[in-house]
Image (tube, rainbow, N blue to C red; front, side, top):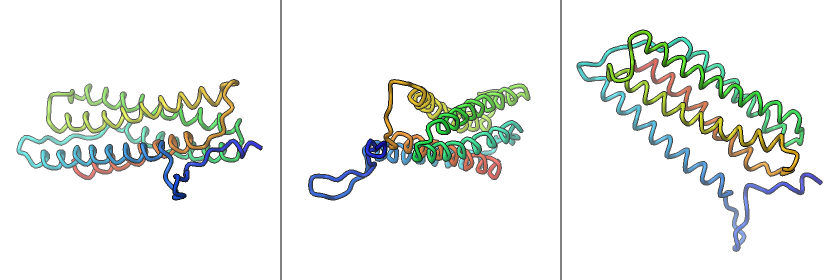
Length: 196
């Protein structure tokens, strides 16, 4: 009976052809624009790195801990989505809560990493190399904050006794976005280590 409440993510148009759900289409357009933005950031970083006044820096160790947190949150998000599909709502709520906590922990560790950079004498505006790091990592952190806000909304809906919606599309959209910001962070970390 609950399966009847599911709204499929692929709908049929008036001529019978399948089309992607509008939420998913919007998400993929957004992801494409974010990819282009970060491609621009990393390209500018490479070009600027070849300038004479470029200085080297070491990434704070806490960025590695934040990486572990966001990787683990991706696993818990995947399990939460699976639990929702199986209508295991108690498990879904627990996993969604853990995902949200790990997302917040990631952001806290990123802020702590920037604090460490400042304490080591690398504040924003001192050197171009560190400025690029602040922009690239900071903009990524903003995208994680957006994901955490979406998690909070889903968390509120999951624990609301008034809302009994078993539509999988919002969960899938959030899960896809969360995995994307996870992969984006892995790419950025590897990039920043390889191209110092």
